[in-house]
Length: 436
Image 1 (spheres, helix red, strand yellow):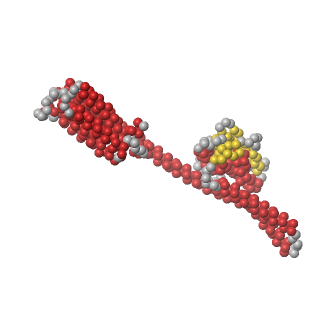
Image 2 (image 1 turned 45 degrees about the vertical axis):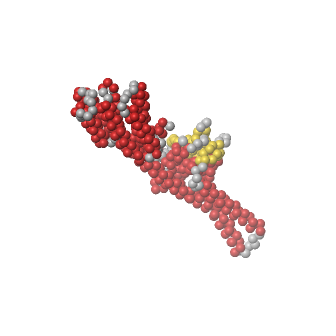
Image 3 (image 1 turned 180 degrees about the vertical axis):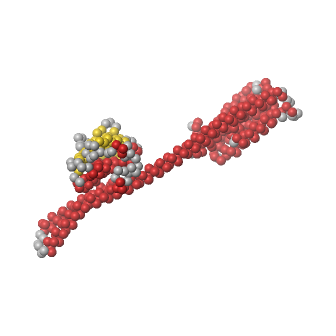
């Protein structure tokens, strides 16, 4: 509530910090001015001080309340109110100095003047106001209209002290301004770098998605090629029998059509699986983790069968998690495809990939192990870097990088790897319940 009062109820953006600071300072000044004026009225009343000092203080209190209201309603009124207040208190302090003697101590309010001009005014305008104040103080001793209550020595002493206090405030504000400018520049630099990194992440994410889509299209082709060949063969057999004049009985025709229908249903289900994977909405679901892993494995089955790779998911008990299924499938697919590529080049005849799942109260640990030839030591530190690939022209260098980014940002986890000549071991650590 107090912070809202200091900002006059306005909302400022980061780059408006200087303006927000001026609003805060003027509201603080108005607040303390109200306290000081109230104290002054009370003391002057009980001391039965004569003259117009009490009406002036009452007028200043009323004007301060008006300024507070105007500042809350009109953001653009700041500069005008600052000039009015500066002029108002300049006249008020001079009045206290001219009409009250040293014994009243009211001249001491002049020493708050540097705070007003240096925090309300720009430096150039503040110098003008301070010069005017010093000039009016120093002509006091030479004027003949008002009784002179200060000696020339006292006036000179007061002027020097006011100048010293003003100089201290000036250099203090100068250092604050330099520090504020430095912080603003650093903030802008950080914001620019953050924007560049965000743009880079979006670009890499898009490229990664496109690369995965290309791999998916290849997988669809693998999934469809054999079933379509079977359908073509079954239709060709019927046509061939007809050309030879053979009698095609109803049972044979029904069996053929049933097989073709089952094949088409399989192809339709395959399309549904891939369509679900590419659905743009990121929705978290409660799923059994082994079922998700099996979906990822199903996508690569044509590749594993073509080069005789045995993929085994070790399941000891059901593990239910709340997670982003499609994103998790993308991560596991990247790891599986890398393992398949490594085994494809391996001389090992008994090619295997093992997938295990471990768990604790908070995290899930998905282990993907292959028995290929491992990752070279000089490559293992770079494999999670963008655009780093050991596949030559066939690699985008984005699979593992994006898998790590997705794991960290979407699942509050990480991916680690251990490798030797006996194979590679990737561990995906993710939250069991993604709550963001």
